[in-house]
Length: 99
Length: 193
Image (cartoon, helix red, strand yellow):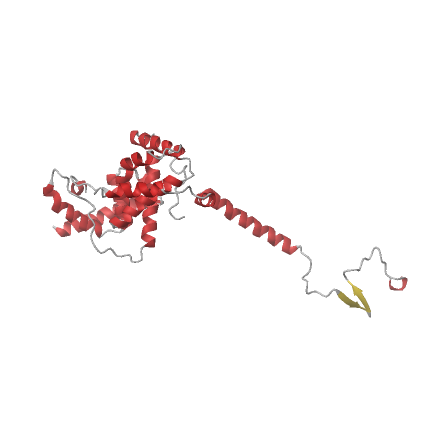
């Protein structure tokens, strides 16, 4: 195969390209740190892991959370209205006849 | 962000540094220390290689010009410590590869109208011009990935491992692209005789 290529050369860039490239490079501004961070593969992996961790923690919080706000706050127990928000069995024990 | 610079550790652990690598590293160190004059010297040293890589990948000279410009704009504005790059030449080739791929993605049509001169006859051997035109026509019929692998292996003289790292594929894939490209190129050349 090298005989096919032998003696042949790849083309060189046009002479005017040098000035164009260097002018563009001279006008270039430093990359913003956010972009620089995003360019880093390690930073992208760390971000993905952080999102995964946040998702897992969120699931754990949701499992132990209070009942949804749609649950009734005042319930009827054997003819008595009990306000669940204010019901504190230790401080307000049930009357004798209900024990 | 697609033309992101490769990781500075990407090429660590390869073979010992070649002399031309040392020269490029010295220029990158100057650039990293704020010496913008180093850009011109770096262009003179590596632009031809980067341009050919982008040309063989994209199949269009305009895209190759833009890719080289993208690389140097990125070098001028990068926050990467260029002095710590393990394999400077392969690092720059990887930047050119990514810039070329970005150009291909942004191009609306995949087809290439005119056949670019992928190879030219040297000035002292003008009788090879017809051979160069035939080879260019055959190379134009190869997929850009195979053409790129052939250039990196045969002309840039990289190892398959380096070709894989520059193009972001495994060593096996790089070698496969090279061999498939050569087989197809040989068939095209035989048919053209």
